[in-house]
Image 1: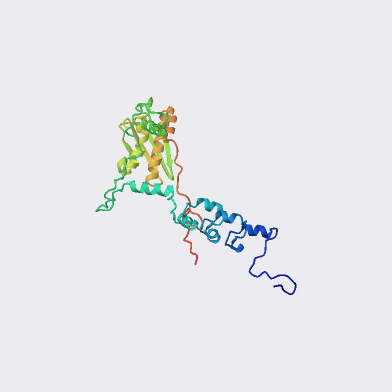
Image 2: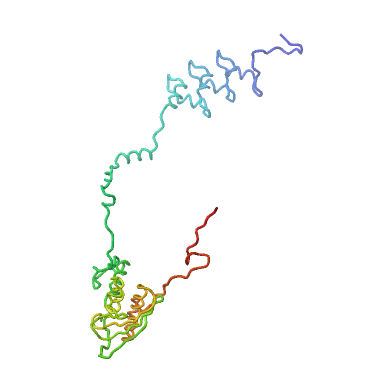
Length: 307
């Protein structure tokens, strides 16, 4: 049957691809199959090779994963199995557990459980007392032998040895203890001034007509005042007479200690190096800082309010 133009009708028959002859298409189509079953992008010759016996080309094309050729699927399919069953079995296969997760679970199994801490009946009863009594230096190296052999490479041991040497009395002190010997000096601390006189005696202190225990009841201040004479080893061979004014109790104690140290320097000038190394000749320049304008004290500011 021909249309008006004289061209025969071709209903139900696909057109032949460009560059291909009708004979080649007819040869590539399996017996009993239509040319429409050939997948797009595949040559007609490749389809019969991937089709197993008893399977249609459409079923094989559906079972082929994206990016895989039908030949590779056909080679991976065992004999007597369909491509769909093989692909579904691969999808259902569970993935292997990562190695770090398995190692972490193994470590958790072997961790020993710690016993829970028992709460004491009285809060703080299980804590150690670290209160330092008054007059005791917690950093003093009292149990270290200065003449023992230590490893000099350890800095901590060297610092402790230096503390022991500083606390040791000065040797080779030559002070004239004649009957009329008098050694005077002036010590200062903050606004306190102490005029000190050293003379041979039994180690008594007379400060503004009162004894050391009466004028300075605190043991800490008494110990600081006695340090210069104890350092030279004359704490029981010289008396101290002092006249003081200005300042408070603590500043007067510092001024008295400074005056005794300078009086010892008058008695023996060779003590300057040792006394200075121990800090007895250095005047303590620390004092209360003056108040500033606009502030409550030297540095304290009024409370700021945004609203």
